[in-house]
Image (cartoon, rainbow, N blue to C red; front, side, top):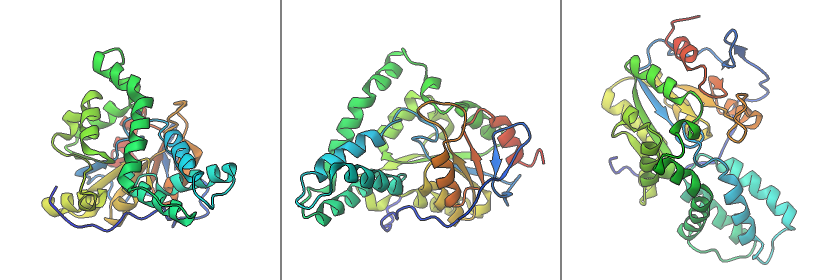
Length: 299
C-alpha cells in the first residue's frame, strides 16, 4: 500500500433506524434490504476476513472482554465488576471492525477516565493477541498439520462464493483489521490466497497509513471505475460503511459463528442493517443464488 495518512477510525454509528424485515429471495435465507443499484455491473469485491470468511478467531470478544475488565478493576474509580462487564461488552460492540490498535487506544481512554495510568496501547494489543493466540493455537496447528480441513474453519460456502465471483471476472481484495502477517498466513492455511493474490491487506505497524477505506480508494483510483461497480462483504460495520460511502453495494454477513446454525445472528443482522447493508446473508451456502441475483441473472 502507498503511504497515505488517514484519520482515526470512528466507532459504530447507526444511520438506518426502525427496520424490521426486507424481502427474501424465494426459497432462500438471502434477505434483500434494498435493491442494489449496481446489479450486473460489478467488477471488484472487497472482503473482510475474520467472521466474514475465516472462523479461526471465532470467540475473540470473550478474550478481549475479560482482559479489559481485569485491567479496569485496577483503576481507582472503577464500577462494580458486573457493571464493568456490561460496559466493556458495549465498548467492544461499538468498535468491532476497527483495527485492534484503535480498540486499544479507546481502552486506554477508559482507564484514564477511571483515574488510572494506562500503558501504551501497543502493550495492551500484545497482551490481547498473546491471549487470543493461546485460544486458537489448536485450530492453527490443526490446519498446519492437516488434521483440520480448511472448510471447517471457513464460513460455509466460502469457496463456492469466491469461485462464482472469479468466474464472472470479479477482481477480489481482502482487507482486515488483523495484523497483515497473520492475515496472510491464515489466508494461506485456509486456501483462499489464490483468489486474492497479492491483494491481501491487514493492519501494519504504521497504523495511520492503513485502513479499509484506503484500500477502496486505491481500487477505484487505479481502475478508474465508479464505486457502483464495487461489492463489499463483511460482518463488521467498518467495511460496509466504507463500501456505502464509496457508492458500492454492501453485503452483510451475519454468520452464527459459534453454532453455525445457518440462521443469521440477530445482533449482527441488526447492526449491519444499521450501517446500510443492502443484502444480508447468514453464510454463503446459497452463493450461487446470491451471485446470480447480484449479476442480474434472476429477478
